[in-house]
Length: 191
Image 1 (cartoon, rainbow, N blue to C red):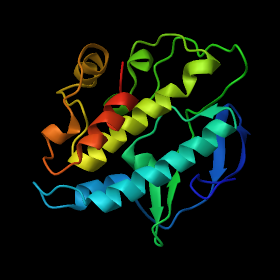
Image 2 (spheres, rainbow, N blue to C red; image 1 turned 180 degrees about the vertical axis):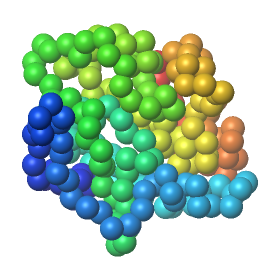
Image 3 (cartoon, rainbow, N blue to C red; image 1 turned 90 degrees about the horizontal axis):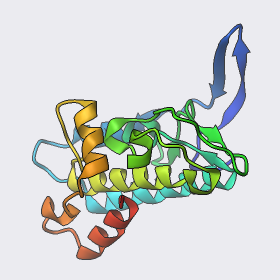
């Protein structure tokens, strides 16, 4: 239980179909916040810092339970009417066990997917949380610049960029972004 993570009240199977019973959050999503600004207008920097801070707190709490979210993205960050953000949609989350391998399954969203996840490489419990850190870096990039680090016509094009290309520093797209932000974000999305 954490203030920045959606509460899951119950889970199980109905026949062969898995289900979650989760808290309802009255409000919107970070995706809605990003899309609501006028074209060409950069996101508000102070609000972006507040959002990424709460997202990091939520993901940190998830990781403290030996769980990896695996699909951090703006639409999975819910903002209630009081401005509190919650990490939601734990549908592809994975509880880690020591020495466990994730197998060769691609899960997540192309715009925020770590290179090793895009390649469906096995991950160990020791490194699995880095997928979420990479996604948080991609989220921060978008929150501060108004665009994700990689764009493409197809998911495969975007995934190949995550694997093969280094992103431009965020300050390339936002001249007023303090240079220290470049270092932190590029470290989070390092290959």
